[in-house]
Length: 476
Image (cartoon, rainbow, N blue to C red; front, top):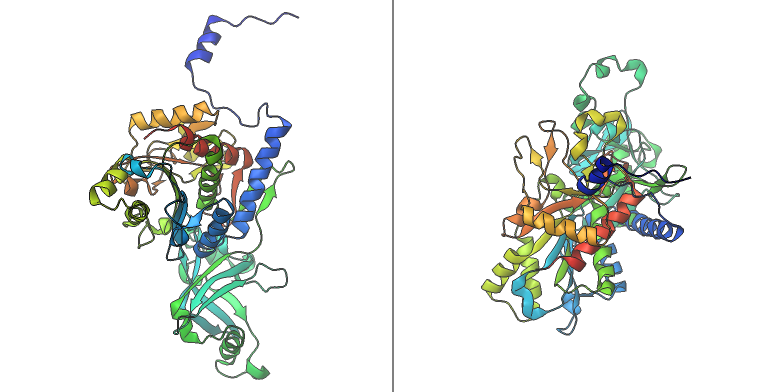
């Protein structure tokens, strides 16, 4: 049977029109194995990185396995460095030419903090012969999503003498877990009448932690005292030590494959540990594929609460990082620092919202992320009339998409919802303040900011390819 000849219109359409490509189309067994292997590595990273401190610990381990040395233990002969700050943020740096620091760095910056629930400074109390702990949610969450599910407690307690105690309760099958109670539907008439944002109030996000009184005798504060006594025996802490603690409640359990075909990864924390991991692995692997520019992947904190604090992007953290690197190689003059920042090129790596068919009305489909079609290239973020946005220069966007195309990394242009539907921001505006070119670029996800976010393995794979292509092909 002869193949029908394409019309002039069809040929012009192929030549002139951009079409999103489904990443699963036409792959072979070798590529499928690469996709699944990458996702397994990412799942392991997630399972061992449920707080910022745990994430930096995991990054430190993986960096060492890939030949990176902490700057405090490195020599000037070393070209692969790890820098960490306050145990909650840091960067990995691949130095190709110390004489070229004024040209800047190729930067991939992501954040490792995630929406969650934190314990208050004095959390423990009794009510109706049960013990609870008070909390304060962190970042933008739908509060009703966090009730009636098993939660694990992770974090660090620092005692008055400086002793640090790491806490991890609820991940082992033998561990207890914690939960936030909800009202039964039989009595929820008044609750049903509330708007979704008020179904569960912030001060109701308190976790159930026990009910047995001290020495099995019901007296005032006996349950609270019993729990404090157990904590004292196990960890050597007293109630005042909660004041100097960072304790976070996160969904208990490991990341999981989703679907009969295992094509998705489901987990808490995709936003934005998914981009952090892929940016890190991309730099590891680009080393073997001939990167030529000084390059770094950066792990920021506090993005979910506005990038504030000394570990967030809205501080001089990036300035300190670059200064520490150039000073290490004896280039610590102010002009080199400023020029290095100004001439750098930065992928602000953060997730974007994929189109969910159940909620498709919030998107303008031509410029929204389609699951399975690769990494999101987001020229601007913000809300309304691009308020609070960094808008990437056209020349830089062209350079980035050229790099992606060169390595056949599938990409799609994206916005966060329809105009005037809502919106959001990233670290991009804070990086652009130094004069560098910045564009947002990351994995499309479903159920963003929920306790169980969803990402396609093919999008994970093409985001990794895109980040690697950036390090390989973009020039300073």
